[in-house]
Image (cartoon, rainbow, N blue to C red; front, side, top):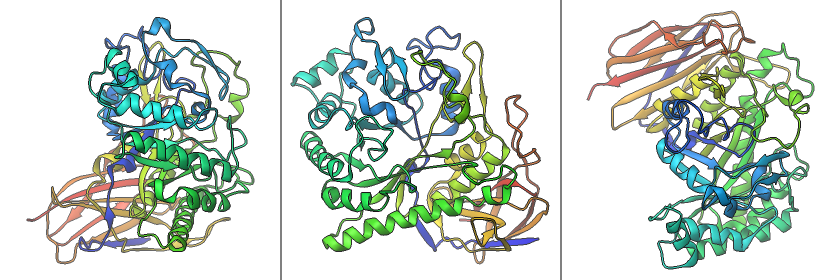
Length: 501
C-alpha cells in the first residue's frame, strides 16, 4: 500500500494558536486532590503540589488550562477557595456528589499554572450564580488595586493582578444534568448581560459562550442560533464539547469504525462554523466568531465503574479511564483534525489532564505513569508549531459502518518559519498492511532529518499501566527534495525536517 504528501509551505491553512493544545483541570475525582495537589506526598513542594506531576505536565507542553469546571462550576462559589485555608468551608459538590474541602482554590491554581508554564482559561458560574459574581471575580483577579476585591486579592498574597484573559461563560448550560440548566433564551440573555458586566471591569477579556454540550442534544443548532443572536457582539468564541468511544451500536471489535471517528469531529466543527457564519451574515457583521473546543477526548472506559462509587468522599476515584493503544491512535487523528481546522478552532482543551480521563495518572502512595494517549498529545503540542499547511496527501481509502472514504494515511504538516522546521504527523490506519510513504518537498531543499519516531506494535486493547509503551525510531531515507519511509500497520508517526536557508 502506498501514500504520499506534497509539502508546499506557501499553501497555508492558518497560523497555529498555541491554545489549541490546552487542557482542563476540574475539581472532580482525583484531578486535584492526590492529583496535582497532595501536601503529604514525598514529591510535594512548599505549596503542596506534586513535582512529579508538574514535570509530566511540562513535558506535555500544555499552554492553557481550563478551570474549575466542568459540571463542578455550576454550583461553585469562587470565594470559598480564597483566604486562609483554616477558614475555608467544606461544601457539598452537587455535580459529582463529593465533598469539596476548598484547600485548593483560585490562588493555588494560579501558582500551579505558573509552575507548569500555562495560562488559565477561567470559567464563571452561570448555573446557580450570575452577573454580579462573575464581575466580582474579574475584579478580584484583574483589577490592580484600590477596591475592596482587588485589595482582598493583595491581602491574600497576590500583589499583582492575575491578568486572566480567557473566560468561559458557564458550562454545558443546555445539559439537563447541569445544576441550573437553562433554555437557550435564558442562557443567551444571561450570558450577554454577564459579558457586558465583565467587560466593564476589564475590556481586554476574551469570552467564550456555551455552545451545545453535544451535537446529539435535541436543541443542537437552535441553541447555537439563539445564543449567538443575543451574544454575538459581546463574545469572541463559541464552545464545542465532544467525546468518543464505543457507544450505542458500536462493536468493541469494530476498529475500522472507531478509527474513523475523526470524520465525525470534522463534520461537527464545520457544522458549527457554518452556524456562526450564518448569524454573522444575517447580522451583516464584520466580526468572526471562532471556536473553543474546550472539552474533547476519548471517554467510555470508566462509565460503569463510576456508578459504584460511594458519594460524599474527598477525591474519590471517578472517571479514571485506563486508555489503550487504539485510543492513542484515535487521539492522534483527532489532534490532526483540530490542526486541519486551525483557521477557526483557536482554543481546545483535552479533558482532562490528571487522573480524570487523563494522559497522566498518579498513585497516591507512589509515582506517576503515562497513559497511551500521552505520547501523540505530547508530540503534537511540542512540535506542531508555526502554521498548518494545506493537506496534499494521497492514499487509498475504506468505508466503515458510519464513515465513507476514510483515508488509510491520515496526515497533517506544520511549518515553523522561525526555525525552518517542517513537521509531518502521519498515521497508518490499516490493520495489516505497511504503507510506503513518500514526502515530496518540491523546490524546497531538505537540510537534514531532525527526528523520526513511530508508536506501534502494541495490541489495540493493551494499556500502559506497566510502562512498556514508548516511542521508537522510525527508519527514513532522505535526499535533497524527498523523504521515504514505511509506516507500520496501526502506527502513529512523526517526522521533523530542517530546511536549507
